[in-house]
Image 1 (cartoon, rainbow, N blue to C red):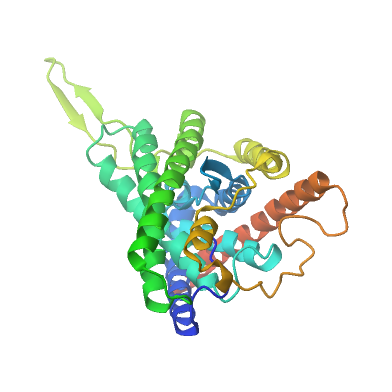
Image 2: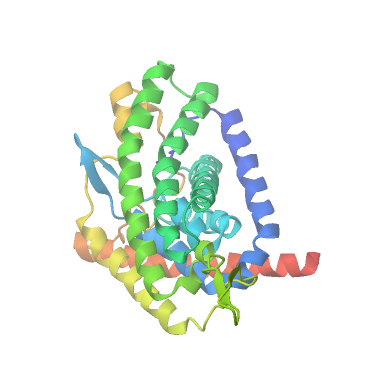
Length: 339
């Protein structure tokens, strides 16, 4: 759902840019508590993993594809405010290095994919957790619901923005129906990927999952007479040193970006497909960095497309880790100065 330049008029792009800037600034202030529990390294790895998996488009039918947005997954792993920073990092790297999403539309993309999917995904996750058994495994189905719903909500938000400042006059009812309909299918893929990733992490390192670290089982105390009482632990699961786990995560991420991405579907994604069907795709303009050496996820000058794509994915992962770490550390420094 990367929005290109040209889909929205200037006032709408400026407005979403201001919303995105405010969200990032607010998140820089609020992420410190989450980062104390999960650490900046996990934030950097999460950003790189979302970047890598977004390279893997999966078919959803009728010549259309989709890819992970990752907001609900990131929020479950590192917390909602850190997740906003994570998603903003991914979109920034994609826009500046790979010409994926317009530069004037960066605020729109952060608002849709870096803010709405995160907040909808996280708060739905929390809501579902309240009615499920209090155990770490409950995070998986709860986040799956959040992931499933977050994608069509973002698609509906796109329709709302288009009704305000869309470049081409089209029937909004048709746009809403098409965007939500196709992105429900994309949301199913989002839910499956989110469930698979969280299941693997929860099974091995639940202490690295932000949404799971406060879900310890209640303690059952038995006195000398056999009477029982239940006590809820006050402190979250203590995080253990994560060097080996993070190393494995980096290796998996590199494999996804440098290998699995080569098998991605070549069909247009949901937004591109709807744009072509409804006739507003012609409003898209090339990004100002369309001539980047890494544009379109390939290294210019390398004739072999597979080698070019694999190398571009690996470069993107490494750059995203560095930028994600830097932003996470900046969030920690800002919060420490404020306190």
